[in-house]
Length: 402
Ligand SMILES: *Cc1c(COP(=O)(O)O)cnc(C)c1O
Image (tube, rainbow, N blue to C red; front, side, top):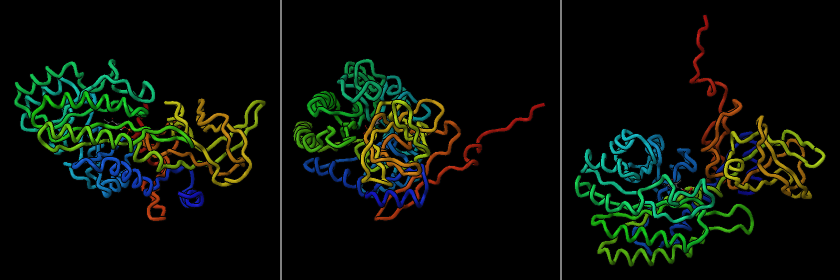
């Protein structure tokens, strides 16, 4: 999106507002499929938790994508968006057995990540094929909160427990149709990913009736100019070759799945905020915007750096600012960053605001959640209304005090 497009959205819908550039989502989707063009059956399952607006789900489905979901509600959102159940995989962690049952009822592909659930499910639904999520114990991922493959991780069934999985399969006569791994977010090293893939291949060779291998996601995207990112093209070349060799050995051309969240939507998103005040202290110049970690928590939660640009005055001389919110707690979006000189009422755009931004927003401080807009074919389409006071109190019950 161009600067003037962002300004147009801010003018039309006010601030704070999230806007997503559909064209960017499509180009990332195409980049991924192009990198794996040598794989005969490639399946992209978008990780709904990154950004779960049904219009976005609908759009990704129109590009050819399916969905990766982690809750019953995400499955329901996918179905609501018109994505058929057979294009949805359910990869929960630590959910109640009843949630797996409900998902099976809806006809989505179930992915099981514990021995006890596998045994329960296999005993009750031996006819329903399931995928098994393994933990390859490879340390990958940008930081410990988002790294899920290490030895102490709660995710997946340890590869050391595969004999136990095989015993459950034998005893219950259940059908395992896929093997899955997801080692974490922000993978920088293609070689580490390939190492984990080797573990997946050797595990997969122990199962006879597979239809797919799912390599999860965790691709790192750039957050600023010259930032490092996962080399998708290199990964595509190397993993495709290895995967095709696996299929040959396995005696069957099965599918290769990915579940990208951040890779597809992060860079499509901009978070538009308005500057309420400029406050000069003895050491810092603060730009205070009409938002906080209630709307965008990643900088405070993960130390994520979202580049901030002044779209009202993009060409002004750059000065140093700390950009903070209006929450009654420290909510620093960025400290000491160079931004084109800011005046009160200017609109600031936060980049990389597509993934894990709106979907992690809350009503803290009793503020309304922002509006969401999809920039589609050079038009700003509203895909979520800004909340109003009625939304804040709709589920609250005012009791009668004697
Ligand atoms: C969160 C998640 C993803 C998506 O991860 P990204 O880093 O956003 O690409 C994929 N698969 C599973 C199982 C997940 O939990």
